[in-house]
Image: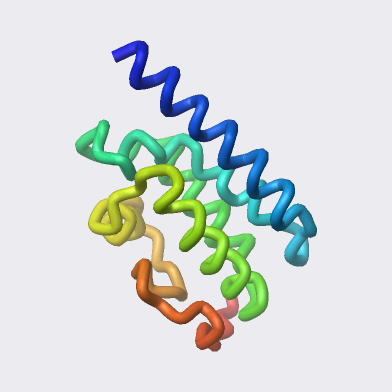
Length: 125
């Protein structure tokens, strides 16, 4: 189990470095790297190592969702999570379950095939 945790942490660190290099600019207050890092408490659930998300994970979902306050931010975060998910071994079915399990309504469908450029909904929080 310790070996799995170490491998997971190594993958996480490597992904963060790659994301920093490829998309370090901030998107109106939150960068891709910041959003992925904020979701760290959700990773065990998202890769299938936990049966349900923990409270810090749900708080992270809520916080990142609140940061996605404009169409542009949602598009950037959509692209960000589409790239980060497969790199981290996120199971798409787990990602789809996360908003409901955390009781957070997200304005963008959680779907690895979504065309992020077509995200248009502007929602007032």
